[in-house]
Length: 233
Image (cartoon, rainbow, N blue to C red; front, side, top):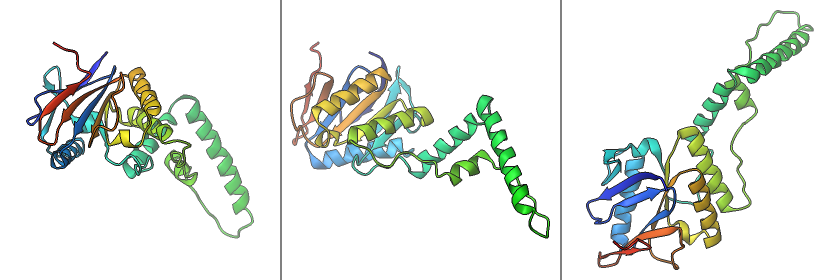
């Protein structure tokens, strides 16, 4: 089990430890406190000031650089502008080396021949530039897949994209257990364990018994703190 990051908050006695071997749940039954935690997490991971401290070996960690939050799991989009820009940059970088570079050069040679033949019938001269990989990708409308058979497939695809393109190390989901079955949750936990990623699930209530892969800090309606699936000391 590899510890990814630890979250501390003034209103929590227990630190939230995100490790590859389990999913950390923060279950907040008090609506006002639930909003407080959700807003703080969203702010900090978006690069603003928040109430959480993200630490590794007691040293500050940039939540914006290493983390990702999905506040609404039903409406997140892989083709948002930031992620699409990262995808285009990565594909363009891949095309500047090795086999891809030679193949792009061959494509431009073919396009040049096509243009010369096309322009030959015109009574005036034309010129053109080589097609840059960025323009070629845009012309082909390269994008992430928009439709998925299941929500868990979309979530794992998004996680893989954020790890590959943004180097994320931990993910925060809001009310994920309300839309995923235990079977799908276990598949998600297994994937994150293999990839050595941390998971934090912020939930507005306890819907069903915890899975073996989960441990939870529960904040009750009257703000008492209860631990579940934590080893007794």
